Length: 258
Ligand code: MLT
View 1: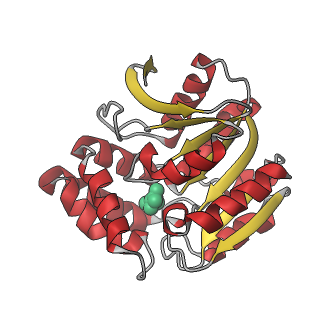
View 2: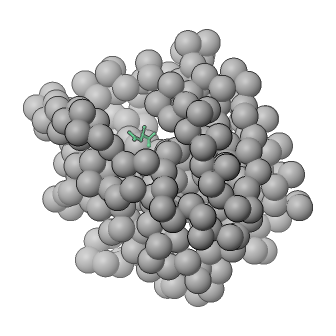
């Protein structure tokens, strides 16, 4: 479905009924990465899956897309859908946006799942690498980013079918959208000072083979989050929900049933 908010056209998918759960996708993918989790959660929840600005079927205005702007998009979507409070599941970039939601719209949040993400900002080297990737995608298009990133997004054992699915999702995005998110992520603030204030139930998930946001980051977040549980997913890399969907879904099920 499409909705106009904050000056752009945002695409989102909605299924099921019950308490709301919003799922925020990773970079440089789209809401479709959550299909296995939607199939589980729609049985008991109202599941809302946006394509974040710049991705999937949503509009890709000129960047940078600040995490705060993307969080405001999500808050506006919830408000337009008449949802007063929702759980938020964010993986990687989705987690960065979840931190902005906490800072700016915490009254909307009932629980958080922070998967394969980090609270720390980019260092100077990381920011330079983002800018290099933004220039690469502007010059060579999304396939160049797919080729560069996919080996780091999944564990070495990930199937060719999953790698092909990721290629399809990345190729379907625009260069402007990918560059806009890269430059926005480079500008994101340090969320570590906020962790102690996040008092809602929080599940931290990480793939044991996640090389982009490694288990040590997840453990540090878990220790700083006063109301959190940590689940490590064996054999998964950065995209733990796609790589080990059964283990990821069972972690979600235990968390939401508690
Ligand atoms: C993601 O999966 O969203 C990205 O790896 C996040 C990042 O590049 O920091």
